[in-house]
Length: 228
Image (cartoon, rainbow, N blue to C red; front, side, top):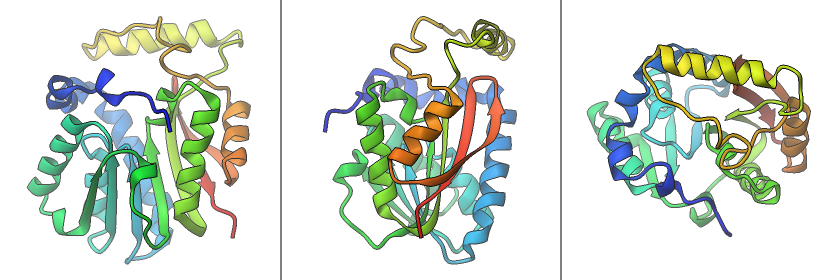
């Protein structure tokens, strides 16, 4: 399957400085992690979680600290990001609960179905809709019936009257926390779908009841279920 090249966005140098670069967005990340813990707490004490596109391991570390008996399979195609993720997991002493897979999800060996999966700020890099559909379908295939999937992506209706205002506020936020940002990649290198389009995509990929549960400007989070 043709995939977006993660090294274009997360090479070795960018991976090494990724966490420090985005430290100013910690409040949004913390809110996302609180949401994850609350929603996924219903899985019970022995859950198996699939973290797709785990990056440097932010949600892995947060969930592993909150649920000390959970087991995690971590999928990340960018070598630099996986290296940092492994190092962060070692620092938190959770590597014994983790299986690390450097590569794409479709190359992960088949396992028993997972209880839930996360995909945090990943799928918007797949600008081809069919490719993005296959990505989510692969996640759905690996989660047990009734299991939960949480995905967070940049999203908005580019045809709406609020689009330009949202982007302006998005740039202001980046500038306030000391980040340079561009906007010419939005809709070109980063796919932006409306709420209805995103829900349709998730349903087509095999999920039911996709629900928008969080928004921070362009960042949107959905919680879906795999049909029982």
